[in-house]
Image 1: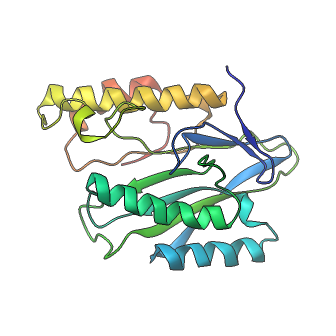
Image 2: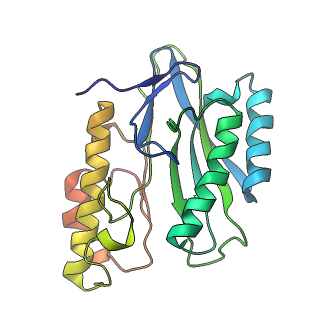
Length: 224
């Protein structure tokens, strides 16, 4: 396992990825990660303000913010995604979290098929706190789609783009699960360490669940 960069001010290590997010985070010794879900999703600026207020009330600095779950009205265009990411990263830069294009914060962004928000919104977030005695290692893996990491754009590298046949969906699921396993291993964990797994798709993958998810150990506690 390669040594990962550590964001010491936040108390966690992370998988370096792209400027808009990291591949995942894990609490450093002496810390643990807790999750907070908003009563209702808040537009991004309001959501970040709520995060600051919550952290202040918990006696934690903005640097403790280590992961977030976003909800968006619809999939972005490539340019729209770039513009959104710059806006998102600006707050993390103001907090001193995102530096020199390196962003330690993990992120998931879902476009709900039902009751989508009117604007990109914050749904939930995670932050570090001093660990209680005996606390198990805690971590968050960033969300991923059926696009291999490291390419110039998303659209041209989507696995089986436009193919929603049973085998097309199988290839997509395998791509995502394999990437989650790679990130878990990078942080020093496996599926048996996960307390919850979240999966989202607008397509019916029920027939693939047993072979491609459950038998890989990814379904001990899953939300779909």
